[in-house]
Length: 205
Image (cartoon, rainbow, N blue to C red):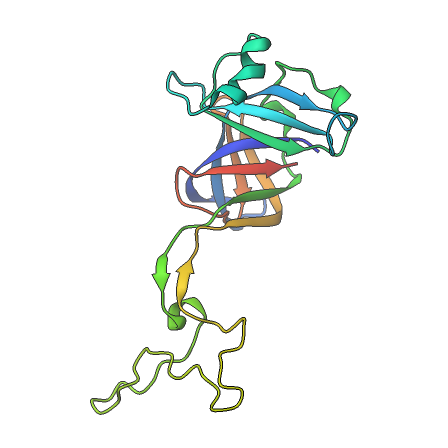
């Protein structure tokens, strides 16, 4: 299993060979370089660390920069670690993972952070029904009583309540790759993926 890091560009519609209109999401693959390899002898799992977003301004601390400077690797803005199912002997420090490792027609799993909607009420967050909208009603979009009387006289854990909505990691599986633009490092995936435009997503092939 190879994992890639991409940036969500947006959504368009394309026609397939049968003339059917398909909604697709455009993902621009970010060139990533293997910066560190963890083997199961030294750590719990086999994993590789990838660096992406090569910029002059970076957000790495001194411990994270240690193995980069030791291996004479350029400073990256971000580092991301992935578990690998196959042996780490297939990877070497300095290897570049690019768009050439993907194929049209395969299905991938994409993970990203969903759009944050802030603090929302129960009607929007948990699909509660609203109350009467007439003038005399005092229960329009409120959730009403949450207690359970004298006995037991408390609110049970797990009660659906208003709160923060969105902004969590979401994974969508079995997304088919419709087309690949090798020149511009663009991948067209059938359907929608989590997050807004410009979000960083992870592609598992």
